[in-house]
Image (cartoon, rainbow, N blue to C red; front, side, top):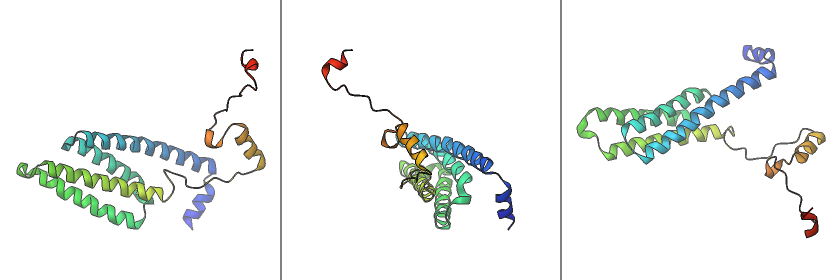
Length: 166
Protein backbone atom coordinates (compact mmCIF):
# COMPACT_ATOMS: atom_id res chain seq x y z
CA UNK A 1 0.00 0.00 0.00
CA UNK A 2 2.78 2.44 0.93
CA UNK A 3 4.72 1.55 -2.25
CA UNK A 4 1.61 2.17 -4.35
CA UNK A 5 1.18 5.60 -2.75
CA UNK A 6 4.82 6.44 -3.43
CA UNK A 7 4.32 5.40 -7.06
CA UNK A 8 1.35 7.74 -7.35
CA UNK A 9 3.26 10.68 -5.85
CA UNK A 10 6.35 10.37 -8.05
CA UNK A 11 5.76 11.96 -11.46
CA UNK A 12 6.56 9.88 -14.55
CA UNK A 13 9.27 12.36 -15.57
CA UNK A 14 11.20 11.73 -12.34
CA UNK A 15 10.75 7.96 -12.56
CA UNK A 16 11.89 8.07 -16.17
CA UNK A 17 14.89 10.29 -15.36
CA UNK A 18 15.90 8.01 -12.49
CA UNK A 19 15.71 4.95 -14.75
CA UNK A 20 17.75 6.78 -17.37
CA UNK A 21 20.49 7.57 -14.83
CA UNK A 22 20.51 4.01 -13.52
CA UNK A 23 20.77 2.59 -17.04
CA UNK A 24 23.55 5.04 -17.86
CA UNK A 25 25.45 3.92 -14.75
CA UNK A 26 24.88 0.25 -15.57
CA UNK A 27 26.08 0.81 -19.12
CA UNK A 28 29.41 2.10 -17.77
CA UNK A 29 29.77 -0.95 -15.51
CA UNK A 30 28.85 -3.39 -18.30
CA UNK A 31 31.26 -1.69 -20.72
CA UNK A 32 34.06 -2.05 -18.16
CA UNK A 33 32.97 -5.61 -17.48
CA UNK A 34 33.36 -6.57 -21.13
CA UNK A 35 36.75 -4.84 -21.26
CA UNK A 36 38.05 -6.60 -18.14
CA UNK A 37 36.71 -9.94 -19.37
CA UNK A 38 38.65 -9.48 -22.59
CA UNK A 39 41.79 -8.52 -20.64
CA UNK A 40 41.44 -11.52 -18.35
CA UNK A 41 41.14 -13.89 -21.31
CA UNK A 42 43.93 -12.20 -23.28
CA UNK A 43 46.33 -12.34 -20.33
CA UNK A 44 45.02 -14.80 -17.74
CA UNK A 45 46.51 -13.78 -14.41
CA UNK A 46 45.19 -13.04 -10.94
CA UNK A 47 45.23 -9.21 -11.20
CA UNK A 48 43.21 -9.28 -14.46
CA UNK A 49 40.76 -11.83 -13.09
CA UNK A 50 40.50 -9.73 -9.93
CA UNK A 51 39.43 -6.69 -11.97
CA UNK A 52 36.96 -8.84 -13.93
CA UNK A 53 35.50 -10.17 -10.68
CA UNK A 54 35.36 -6.68 -9.12
CA UNK A 55 33.33 -5.45 -12.08
CA UNK A 56 31.04 -8.47 -11.84
CA UNK A 57 30.46 -7.79 -8.17
CA UNK A 58 29.79 -4.11 -8.88
CA UNK A 59 27.16 -5.08 -11.43
CA UNK A 60 25.66 -7.59 -8.99
CA UNK A 61 25.53 -4.95 -6.27
CA UNK A 62 23.54 -2.68 -8.59
CA UNK A 63 21.07 -5.24 -9.95
CA UNK A 64 20.58 -7.93 -7.28
CA UNK A 65 17.24 -6.47 -6.25
CA UNK A 66 15.71 -7.19 -9.68
CA UNK A 67 17.26 -10.61 -10.29
CA UNK A 68 15.00 -13.66 -10.16
CA UNK A 69 15.32 -15.95 -7.13
CA UNK A 70 16.51 -18.84 -9.29
CA UNK A 71 19.38 -16.70 -10.61
CA UNK A 72 20.20 -15.33 -7.16
CA UNK A 73 20.48 -18.87 -5.82
CA UNK A 74 22.82 -19.85 -8.68
CA UNK A 75 24.87 -16.67 -8.17
CA UNK A 76 25.23 -17.39 -4.46
CA UNK A 77 26.74 -20.78 -5.31
CA UNK A 78 29.03 -19.27 -7.96
CA UNK A 79 30.25 -16.45 -5.68
CA UNK A 80 30.96 -19.04 -2.97
CA UNK A 81 32.86 -21.20 -5.48
CA UNK A 82 34.89 -18.18 -6.56
CA UNK A 83 35.86 -17.22 -3.01
CA UNK A 84 36.70 -20.79 -2.04
CA UNK A 85 38.94 -21.14 -5.09
CA UNK A 86 40.44 -17.66 -4.58
CA UNK A 87 41.29 -18.45 -0.95
CA UNK A 88 43.39 -21.42 -2.07
CA UNK A 89 45.67 -18.95 -3.85
CA UNK A 90 47.06 -17.85 -0.50
CA UNK A 91 49.02 -21.10 -0.55
CA UNK A 92 51.60 -20.47 -3.29
CA UNK A 93 51.94 -24.21 -3.92
CA UNK A 94 48.32 -24.31 -5.11
CA UNK A 95 48.72 -21.44 -7.60
CA UNK A 96 48.64 -22.79 -11.11
CA UNK A 97 47.29 -22.08 -14.56
CA UNK A 98 44.51 -24.51 -13.74
CA UNK A 99 43.42 -22.43 -10.74
CA UNK A 100 43.60 -19.23 -12.79
CA UNK A 101 41.41 -20.73 -15.50
CA UNK A 102 38.98 -22.16 -12.96
CA UNK A 103 38.50 -18.65 -11.55
CA UNK A 104 38.10 -17.29 -15.06
CA UNK A 105 35.42 -19.86 -15.90
CA UNK A 106 33.57 -19.10 -12.66
CA UNK A 107 33.63 -15.38 -13.53
CA UNK A 108 32.21 -16.19 -16.96
CA UNK A 109 29.41 -18.21 -15.38
CA UNK A 110 28.59 -15.33 -13.01
CA UNK A 111 28.60 -12.94 -15.96
CA UNK A 112 26.24 -15.09 -18.01
CA UNK A 113 23.91 -15.75 -15.07
CA UNK A 114 23.49 -12.03 -14.35
CA UNK A 115 23.06 -11.08 -17.99
CA UNK A 116 20.59 -13.90 -18.52
CA UNK A 117 18.53 -12.68 -15.59
CA UNK A 118 18.62 -9.08 -16.84
CA UNK A 119 17.60 -10.23 -20.31
CA UNK A 120 14.41 -11.65 -18.81
CA UNK A 121 13.47 -7.96 -18.52
CA UNK A 122 14.72 -7.40 -22.10
CA UNK A 123 17.55 -5.25 -20.75
CA UNK A 124 19.91 -6.04 -23.63
CA UNK A 125 17.69 -7.03 -26.53
CA UNK A 126 14.10 -6.19 -27.37
CA UNK A 127 12.78 -9.30 -29.06
CA UNK A 128 9.52 -7.84 -30.29
CA UNK A 129 8.34 -4.72 -32.04
CA UNK A 130 7.21 -1.64 -30.24
CA UNK A 131 3.65 -0.60 -30.94
CA UNK A 132 3.17 2.82 -32.48
CA UNK A 133 1.21 5.16 -30.23
CA UNK A 134 -0.62 6.95 -33.02
CA UNK A 135 -0.79 7.28 -36.76
CA UNK A 136 1.01 10.62 -36.56
CA UNK A 137 3.84 9.09 -34.54
CA UNK A 138 4.13 6.21 -37.01
CA UNK A 139 4.26 8.57 -39.97
CA UNK A 140 6.86 10.72 -38.21
CA UNK A 141 9.06 7.63 -37.66
CA UNK A 142 8.71 6.63 -41.30
CA UNK A 143 9.38 10.20 -42.46
CA UNK A 144 12.57 10.32 -40.35
CA UNK A 145 13.75 7.10 -41.96
CA UNK A 146 13.21 4.90 -38.91
CA UNK A 147 12.97 1.16 -38.86
CA UNK A 148 15.82 -0.93 -40.23
CA UNK A 149 17.70 2.13 -41.46
CA UNK A 150 17.82 3.67 -37.99
CA UNK A 151 17.22 7.25 -39.11
CA UNK A 152 19.33 7.10 -42.26
CA UNK A 153 18.00 8.41 -45.53
CA UNK A 154 18.05 6.44 -48.74
CA UNK A 155 19.74 8.57 -51.43
CA UNK A 156 17.76 9.45 -54.52
CA UNK A 157 18.85 7.51 -57.57
CA UNK A 158 18.85 9.44 -60.87
CA UNK A 159 16.44 8.09 -63.47
CA UNK A 160 18.87 8.44 -66.33
CA UNK A 161 22.59 9.23 -66.61
CA UNK A 162 22.01 12.81 -67.80
CA UNK A 163 20.36 13.72 -64.45
CA UNK A 164 23.48 12.75 -62.46
CA UNK A 165 25.73 15.28 -64.22
CA UNK A 166 23.59 18.30 -63.41
